[in-house]
Amino acid sequence: MKLFEYEAKEIVRKYGFETPRGVIVKEGDDIRKAIESAGIKPPLVVKAQVLVAGRGKAGGVKLANSVEEAVAIAQQMFRTPIKGIRPSILLIEEAIKHDVELYAGFVIDRAERRPLVLVSRYGGMDLEEIAREHPEAIIKYYIDPEKGLKSYEARLLGKQLGLSGKQLSSFESFLVTLYRVFIDYDAELAESNPLALLPDRVLPLDVRITIDDNSLYRHPEFEATQKERLGELTEREIAARDKDLAYVELDGDVGIISNGAGLTMTTMDLVYEFGMRPANFLDIGGGAEAEHIKEALEFVMSDPKVKKVFINIFGGITRADEVARGIVMALKDLGDRAKPLVVRLTGTNEELGREILKEVGIEPYTDPLEALEHLKKL
Image (tube, rainbow, N blue to C red):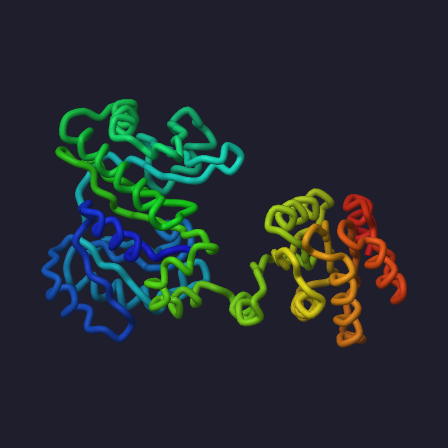
């Protein structure tokens, strides 16, 4: 689950680190009164609270030189979609004059099974382009998960960025703080971009935090903003949540159903490699029963843009016979609305699952590449 910028900054402040002074406004609020009550002075920056990358380039971050201009920008921003999403919350902050923007962030390197910190002297909107063209500009440092990030390690990273004196001390403090947030909030990502370099300190102008969905039961405080968060989802993604389906809508025409996030992502990659485009990500998880499979297949086939469907199952705790029964149930209910379907089925109770599918005229594959060759011809 992605947090809004203002939520992430509230957390950073809770841990004792300064962020720019600002105020949250919602559509219908008296924006001028909110700004004046917060005591923030121009120049101001108006920032759409949308859970998409690149909002700055898309017009979601704008500078205002007066309160009147900030009000006008905010009113317009509420009416203007940012990458297809119309913001319902804005953050208005004091604009901070600065010349240098840094980057600092933490992620989990799953291959190494430990946290990775990335820092760079080149923060800002073009960081991804810089990382592609000049990978040496990104400093990477692995953290021992048992020991955590030590102050001296944060300090050494700051020195590699060319910092010294008060700037170095402030950077050290921020990096240690952000790591604590990263761990305490079960984050998959915690970053500041840009992290402004001021004469005597660093100041996070933006903060992003993504919490592992599996840990949300430990963070009930974010339920209050769930309605706004759902506004970032498509209608089909919201409908999928209601059906307890792990689903992400994409723009292709091949429906994807698989078990396990890793296999589902691999399946999507294979579909791309065969010159096709996935219409969705749908992970049925482990141990899915026939009714859940039925609901997943009916949901994918109900998507108007889906022309054909690929089901790729490698069963462990997921039983192949349950998958097969679910497919048969769905096809029976769909009738003439069913779309072309290719199934790769291996694992627990594989032979029974294959027999069930053969009874309705489906010949399941054991090799996913052979299955995709057939899918491509449909």
